[in-house]
Image (cartoon, rainbow, N blue to C red):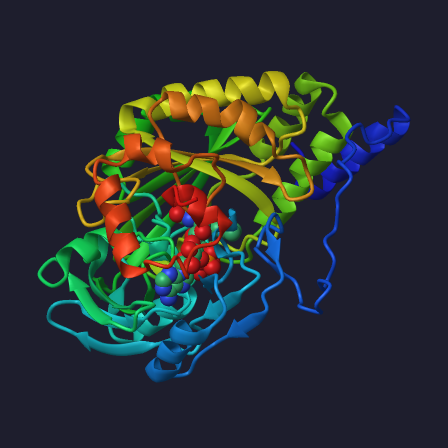
Length: 464
Ligand SMILES: Cc1cc2nc3c(=O)[nH]c(=O)nc-3n(C[C@H](O)[C@H](O)[C@H](O)COP(=O)(O)OP(=O)(O)OC[C@H]3O[C@@H](n4cnc5c(N)ncnc54)[C@H](O)[C@@H]3O)c2cc1C
């Protein structure tokens, strides 16, 4: 059995002894200019796939300043949270509007486990804030750098058969429209706007705060285990029904999957320890770079390393365990499918990658999300869902996500994640969302001049 260092040594030594050059060459990259002709500095999203040169970057301090901004700023006015969306929804050469100064806890209700949170609060900070008042978020995504508003606006989710995405626990929110109206939105006040704008892609106005329904604070146990994919698939439906949060990552070209489980516990705290995901990813990249030409050798080496992986175990508050550091950048496409379609679609995705894309080394992620009723544009609207997320290293070609992966996920009836890569537009969404036309009419009514629209969201909403 090899440990990681021995594995790296082994890979390097085998390559050297066989006089192997790296068999993979990254495609040439065009690096955009730091400034445009007018001297405006570049803005880029987290993955680096999108960029723009905003003529104004504003971060208002008060509601009055925000109102003035919305009335006077150069269009397109696009709210930006942490810029973690993989697609072009935040890009603007007009006004980039950040709610960084609208951050923190407004109030809370101990008996009802609710809290009013400002929209620009980062999820990591939210975890800390809620801990200080004895509450915890009901579910947490894979990272916690996002703002609350950015996460909710795109239907951000974690994994859990009985747990909805983040927006599923929003009781109400405050919306400021470009026409200067301040609207309280809930199922009992401005209900249509609540349903339409909750997962709203920054297209209905600016959300300034949310009332969230949380859980009482309790410890969570984390268990991560590596196992053969076929074993995992055989127990998957049992796993997600019996564990609070179950998900897995399939590691392409290895036959192995990493099972990640989280459950409430009364056991003593065992801190999580150092996150080794970045090292593991770089090992997988090395394997791709040097032995990608031989799928069988690649698989054999990966399995030797994985044998030594062991089980990762920790006990702590959920907000400290469910999110990970993701310091290796990537591009991502994620679709949400009817639960029954998840495994058949996943098998096709794996087959196509392993037969046609030897350059792929990033794990493929599978999660489950409970259906909800709150948001008309929730990808989980009235449907329990199994998601599949396919990633590509940020320097690698990711067009295969559109040409090879997306057709499979569409064929199985998937709805794309609003914050990730997809090629769909208005006419596709009209078929996927029963209230699509009503949502469009509400957007048009709240922003008749389209001040909040950029070219990406124009395509989504079918605005010429
Ligand atoms: C490394 C990484 C890991 C991820 N993991 C997950 C995951 O586990 N699960 C998941 O579901 N997603 C995940 N995502 C996707 C991510 O959660 C979403 O793209 C989310 O929108 C990012 O939040 P943000 O604050 O960066 O928002 P941004 O990308 O900056 O903005 C997203 C949208 O929100 C709008 N918006 C922002 N603030 C406001 C406001 N105050 N009012 C109205 N609209 C507003 C913007 O205009 C835009 O349309 C991940 C992304 C990355 C890069």
